[in-house]
Image 1: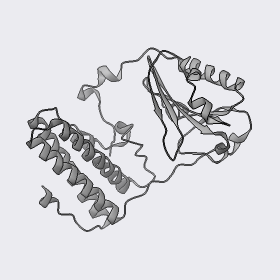
Image 2: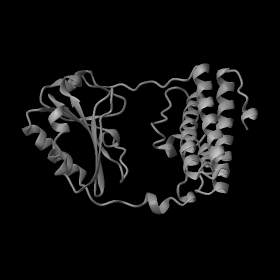
Image 3: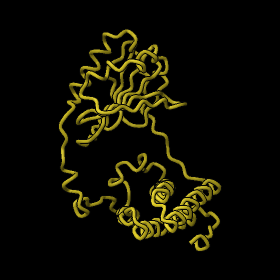
Image 4: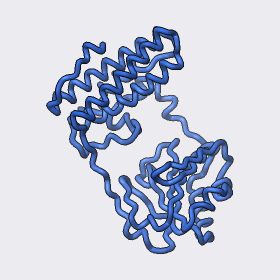
Length: 277
């Protein structure tokens, strides 16, 4: 089965051919590495993401891990990334349980900078290709690309996801009827999150656990089946009640189709879809 989707047939050609101008990423990375060489606190830098995998799009970010003996000074100082271009906005994310980051949006580009304690470097594992930009202490020799194998849900997890999705759908419908479009869009977002989970599980069931469903729907044109992509075309609507109701019905139709297919393949007890409908 072909997974590819013709973007031009859906009005995407003008957008997908557009190329931005702005940040010179090669120059920006060279500048960062030169700065890091002179900064005794910075011990290593690693490039990850699409650039390291040589899969960049004109709008691809650059993802860089910065390993520091003491991350605190880098997190309180903007000068090391502020020099790389005209900054528009910055997301300063604490990322509890992981590593804090600075997502810096420049005119014509974006850098995702993770600031990590240096002594963590030898134990770091990357699911996708990476490139070591700087390693002052020789710890990068232990770095490995180790993809975490996907897993399928057990029956309890599967039914929990169905309950979450249908609860969001019912609340979305209620908001549409009450003419509360903002609330309906919030609940529709919750429904779409569960719908994406079902799409991922469905593909893993049919193509195996090594099949790469990416993250948050990224690169969906490459991995998602054509019939699923076409069904999704009807799952979003405008702000009005008629449009929202039609999109909700389309979302539920796809949600139900995938849920039944997954349950049948994994031998789970059937869910009362018709009752919710």
